[in-house]
Every structure is written in C-alpha cells, then in structure tokens.
Image (tube, rainbow, N blue to C red):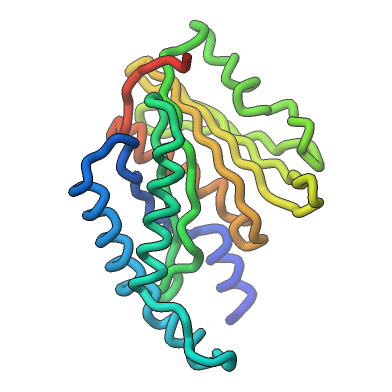
Amino acid sequence: MSTDADLRILTDIPFHWEFVPAAGGGAEQREYFTAHMIEFFGTWAGRTLATAEAAWTAGEFPFNAENIGRETAALLLAKADELPGYARLAWGTAFHEEQVLWSPIPVVVEFHRPLADDPGYLMDTVGAAGLPEDAREPVLHYVSVPGADGVRIFALGRTPQSTAYGRVDAAMRLDSGIDVVLRTRVFQMDQMGVIGAGIEQLMTIIAADGVGVTGEAPQ
C-alpha cells in the first residue's frame, strides 16, 4: 500500500455507528441485537477470519462469526445495562476494502438538560484543561454540525499499569436545548489516529436524528 493510501485511510475513514439497546429492553430486542451482531461479523469480517484461520497453527481455529458476534453482543449489552437512564451506549467501527478494521469501539453518550445557560461549562465536562491521568495536554477541536455546536478533545493517557490509551471526550448543545456528552477510550495506535473524526461523525448523526435524547438530568 502506498504512503498516500495509508494517509487517506487514516484521515478519511467513514465510520459505521449504531446504538445498543437501552437497559431494560425486552428479551426480543436483545435477541435481535445478538442476531444482528452475528450477521454483522459474518458479512463484514469473513475474509479477516479466513486469513486469521489460514495463519493459525495452534490446533483447531476457535473463532467464527457466531461466537465472536454473540460474545461481542453480550459485552455491549452488559455495558449498556450499567448505564443510567440518561445515557446510551453506541458502538462504531470502520471498513477498509469491505472488511471491518476493528472490533466495535464503545462510546457512552449522555443526554442532559443544560446545567448552565452558558454552554462553556461543557469545557470542564470534557476535561479540556486536562485530567490527572493525561500524559500530555489535550488537543481541543471546536465542532459545528447541522443542529449543534460543541467541542471534542483528544488526549493521551496512561492506565495505572502504564498502558497508553487515547481519551476522547466531546460535548455539544443541540438546537433543541439538550446537552450531549460523548466519552470513549481507545488503545490501538491506528484507532487513536482516526477516533476524533469518528466521534464527530457520531455527533453529526445524533444532532440530525436526536438519537436517544431523553433530557433526563443525572442524579
């Protein structure tokens, strides 16, 4: 692959975003989501799985679309069940040559009634001045999408075990008057290079559709 192609992939990736069923959803909804994830991996990761299987040398290949999709769905549903009523869990990935690049990246999306008339308070909410776990000063981007204006920040952080990760926190005020906060962490270098653009795409979707908007303030 050429350097130009590498750069284009890193800077111009269209993400695929979906929302996980909210906590309290019925069994039918959860079963549908699980079946959807199995189909998703079967359709979009088939070649990746085949390549991995061809290179596998440790006995029977243990992975297939069925078990990967089912396990991924279970993990995402469990995370969604932990969230309060004013939050939803989104997941996203990107594609290259019609194959998924990564396992789903989870994003917690909170919907709040504004805590202040001036949306400037959202700068503190996203840790624009930095958080104790940040390894370096965050990079701030102002975001304007149809139906909302906001900010997103990217910072490099380290876990207590010294594992590096990328922190993306973003917030926007919808034209409807609802404040939306998005939070995710990524641990792979290739994800760090594109996750900011991916979050901005998710912000665009939410502002356009009002996905998950409840307006419930946190307790």
